[in-house]
Amino acid sequence: MINKTMYARGAESSVIREIFTYACQRKEQIGAENVFDFSLGNPSIPAPAAVRESIERNLMGRSPEELHGYTPAPGLPSTRKAVADSLNRRFGTAYGQQNIFMTCGAAASVCCALHALTNPGDEVIVVSPYFPEYRVWIEEAGAVCVEAPAKSVTFNLSVGSIMSAITEKTAAVIVNSPNNPTGAVYPRETLTRLANILHERNKSRLHPIYLISDEPYREVTYGAEVPWVPDLYEHTVVCYSYSKSLSLPGERVGWVLVPNTDPMADKVMPAIAGAARSLGFVCAPALFQRVVEDCVDEPADVEAYARNRNLLANALGEMGYTTVEPQGAFYLWVRALEPDAQAFCERAKSFELLPVPSDSFGVPGWVRIGYCVSYETIKASLPAWKALAESYR
Ligand code: PLP
Image 1 (spheres, rainbow, N blue to C red):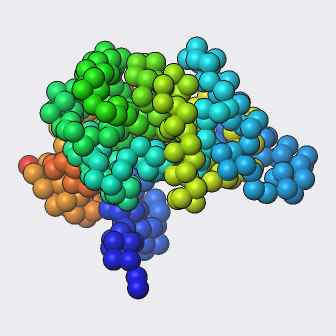
Image 2 (image 1 turned 90 degrees about the vertical axis):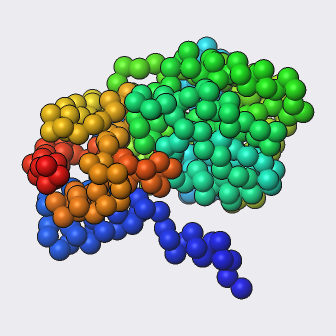
């Protein structure tokens, strides 16, 4: 008997994927250069040269078992140590390999964290607008997704709205900074206030509320500080991937960190391991664990995204669109020119523009433009954005 929930999720797919599929079909019909697909967060910047060198070196110098064999379930000890050492250099921490569990990307990391930290019926708070898959992953863990609206205008996390959303059933809060879809980066001061209220609430609770810090865009920033969340709040699990920083989304490699500063780390890490086992996310891709080990300190190339961001945000601003200046990630959050974002996106389609409507991110009236495409694509799309705006005058 087919599982109805799984069928519904598979048959629906995500709005982002639907637009991407439409874009592929449309490109076949009228030529790739005439379609402006801003749907997916697929980096256009090539992986750094060091990644290619590492792949080549590993291919030449290793046995088939080392290259393509199963690794230990939590990952190669040397890779986990390299990741921990890198974090220690950057954040002055004292992590060891036992604090790192290698996963198949941030998606797997967040799923493991949710399964490890919640029980059926628990609530998990997300800051809306939020990455749409969070709802699927939370519900898959048997928990309930509770939305806490971000601040208007800046889209910074609102400590007040999280406070109001907390109940006795709250098990975790997902924070995602730099943020998809708004590009907001949560300031140290805001996260510190959040930590303070969580500490306060924990005093009267049996179990602490966890922060799940989903950070695949940590390195993609335009000058803003991205605080290290476990320094501010001990009950934090960090979820990371190399999908964006090293432009390796198809290779499915990342990690979960359970910090040794969490007094419950000796319970949380086995639960992460159990979740990874239950979900089938053990033994992250072997070759790419080795690549991570070699490239763990490789800087992300954000210059190209910065150029794209400036071109797009300035041009759309001049055309009269309301935009939120992204502090990080590679998405521009733009107010739709009519209340119904889906209707706006339908009209944008007739100009071959393919942004994503905000409804699936949990709020009405906005669109997300992924500017991780080429500079030329953005430049070529500007007359279409202008014509779209003029069609509303
Ligand atoms: N979390 C956020 C906020 C994302 O934007 C994405 C991907 O776009 C993911 C998680 C999943 O990342 P990965 O491809 O590494 O699984």
